[in-house]
Amino acid sequence: GDALNVGNVLEGSVRKSGNKIRVTAQLINARDGFHLWSKTYDRELADIFDLQDEVSKEVALAMKVTLLDSGETSLAASKTSNPEAHDVFLRAQSAVYERTTAEERRALELFRTASKLDPEYGPPLLGIAKTAMIMYTNHRTLSFLKAQEISKEALDKAAALDYKNSDYWATLGLYYHNSSVFDASLVDKAEEAYQKAIELNPNNVNAYIWYAALLTENKPGDNLAQAIALGEKALALDPLNRVANGNQQITLADVGRADEAVANLKRLIELDPGYPTYRHVLATIELTTARYLDAARNLVQGNRSDSRQAYVALRLLTLFGDRSLLSDYVEHVPLDNPAQELALESGQALRMTRPELVAKSQVMLLQPDYEGFSGVVQSRLMELGEWQIVKSLIENAAPDLKAGRVPIYQEGIVSDYIVALYESGETDHAKALARTALGLDEWRHILGPRGVGFSRVAPLLVLGRTDDAARELEDGLAQGFLGYFQQGIDENPFYAPWRGDPRWQRVKAETKAKLDALRGPVLALYREAGMISREGAAD
Image (cartoon, rainbow, N blue to C red; front, side):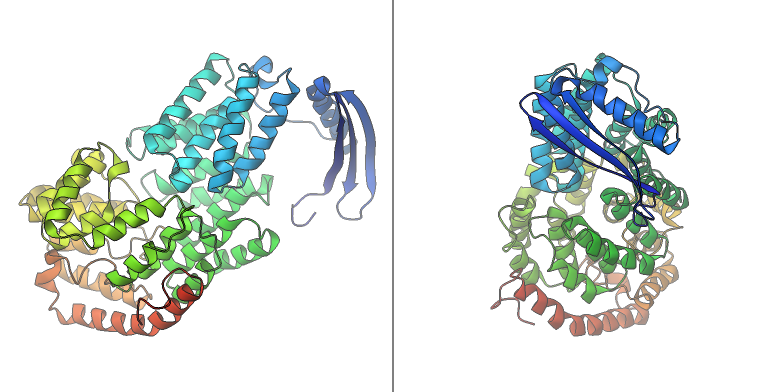
């Protein structure tokens, strides 16, 4: 009762024999274990929805409460006369909740099967739309364009059935939400859809979770306090919800409450050790709040088949500014990790010559979306001073930037674009964009999962604010941030005029000393876990 923040618990069992089912339900006082109510129901499987309604009403009567409207608008589309379709739908719901690559794929197929079994059954359609977007955002197991296509088709079918309940609006919000990364004008549409979902059903947990994520990831401005409040509402409704708990800890860390977030995640891992995302989130928070060795310890215990785990583990190694380490790591990413192919391509890019990189960039430019973009190729070209190519690559991947709209939480690519503009001779454009970017980020911290790191240094330099840029480096180091080499400051020719500044040299020297002390323990952990070669990557 305490863990769930509830006074009563409903327990029960379901037994099925042919077309008959027996449901046993009992309502128990969570504080003293007293049985408040119990009943056994024998029904035909075809009557499952009527039985659900009957049990709900009798439990509510026993608790002396009134059931809230779920926001259903079309009773016909919310139920099915096909028990198998409902059973498959429930299995799909369970699978997608796991948030692993394998279970997300399984969920999508199960939702599709349920929809084929009853094309006029609304819930599986929303499941298809939701899962496609989750597969894109969580693991990139679907491209954005494919996820968008699948999601839009399913939502249109649900709308044609007049299945526009609270879940429909929440899922439509998720569709706009993820699409807004490439079209910022959709942020408002996503927010309106989430608000509509909550209006129809104030107990829609997903609506609160996704709305909070929109505020922290896509909507400009300092919306973190509102996002935390939405997260608290979701957790009040469902205290053990995995997604709500994970997202909330990230937001807490972003507002400087990292100690609290770390403690919460350690407790959640003990309560739910089978959910790998908690450890990935914990490692992310530790990495981005300068708890580097703690992050390494959690990364080696994580799920190596998880693309997000692979990204965070690689990101930790980038601190050392050693390409041989990165090449070693990408060669050890497991075959069943969705990031494996991209990791190998990144490893190849690290070894490419200038002509090979230029040729690779021309191939990337033929793909008119973010899917073909490679940050490694871009950073290598920046080191070589190929500013026009870098500018074209970023404009191809982020068309909003070319139009003068600065996407939030993409500060790395924004900073690089400002540099490419400046070095290409478009100084006025670069300065205007630098002012906009700094204005959007002025409230953000250096540390944190959505921290800016040293990404403000380049815009400050473009604007001639050299002392502010030096202070940014000094402040980051004072807070424990060791991203000097990760940012490419020591290799990118743009920074050359300022690298001789004594303040910059001190930051570099102290960062290197701290990284030298950290390198041995981190690499030992990676080697023991088989994430790099025992013979390679000498420390």
